[in-house]
Image (cartoon, rainbow, N blue to C red; front, side):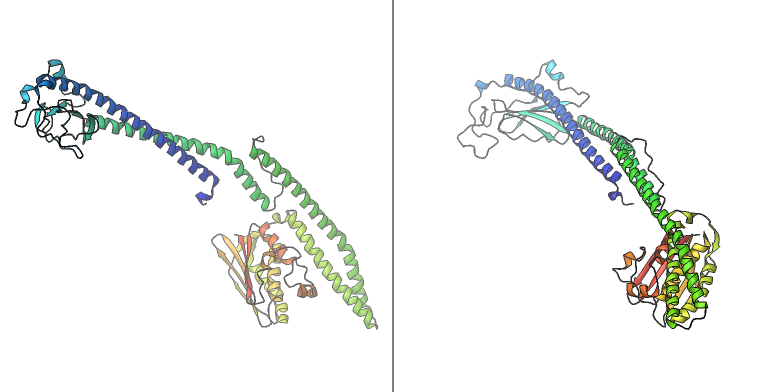
Length: 487
């Protein structure tokens, strides 16, 4: 079964896709919210330390003691040459404070001790770009921040989160710390979200499968019952417990429809059987009188021809009545009874020998290829199948043609094939050849007395035995009928 053609699988795929998208969106939003909160918390801690470092630097370098800059640094694109860098700074050549000149009180110094998330560090730069102070925990090679539109800013450099500030003095104060531990926590949180989302997805798919299975179970029951009914068992009904749901109501409607069909087919079969039974007696009487008339001495040739025509018409009527009775029995299910193991190859051989005189009369050669094949069925009905197929192959063949009858086995199937070199069947007639009273060659069939029920009876017998019949034909080249029956 193609999964994409299954309602259950398509419903499950759409349900899973929608649930996966919702879970992915929720998980990403939760992770981004957690990341933003973590970065905000870290930035608040860094801002607190930036303010202490700025105060300590301002205490060492009062604003009023600093003359205007001579060479501002760093240069900015679009900054007029005569505009000083934000904040005043010493003239070039004035020595900046060294590392010992920036003293933090004990309380503030403790803010830069190592903690669970890593040690904080700070670096201070002179307006001309020289480093004037740094903590012992500061890593080497920290680049000077670039001036932005705001005197405060932040950046993420590898696993380090840093906040910087350009005070009015023109210096640059940067405080940061290693956030690898926080990033690891975020990764663990992401994995936790992914695992939880996967579990929810699996539970959602399992629940959706259970719900869809219960919802679509009546459809399976309806399909199974319809398949059994299509084989001819019109007494079958759809069994469903929930008769109030939409599918339960559909099952009730279908059951009512099947009941009406069963009643209609029963009436049709009863009518056919009753009509055939009623016609058998007058036809028998007519044939008896015509035979008596032909056996009695009669010098009038016209009377004799009339008796012969009546006899031929009576025989055609008797053949039609027998066919109608056979179809009535098949429609009523009588073919399912009276089954026994039989040799299909023997049936084909006996039937072929009986029809060989007819083949010689038509100038047709009969060829047989039989291998021992044993199946279960009604010998009389299976013999009728072989008779109908071989007689049709002879009748619709060309003079000098051939008919090949073959019996073999394939896996657990008995195969009977009848191939001829006759006129074949056109594409327009091929879909209708198994219909009752249908004749592809209407003019020839009416002259020969064929009723158009032979293939219909054959198909009904084969299907009643749990088999199948197929035809391959090409107009002007012949036809090949293949019957498959269970061994």
